[in-house]
Image (cartoon, rainbow, N blue to C red; front, side, top):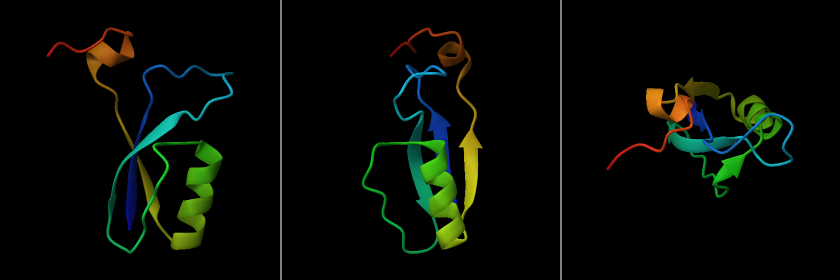
Length: 70
């Protein structure tokens, strides 16, 4: 099983807010109801389900804090 996540756009280190957003889950029977999740929560989910966490790269515009067009 794989859990695909990406770092949130408006998330900075040191903030007391969840930093990752779950994009999708492949395989298994896992339902995630939270829109945003902390790294320690992801690690615990992966440990208990045997899933691999895949961190997706952010787009070039998002990396610089520029909102994508469209």
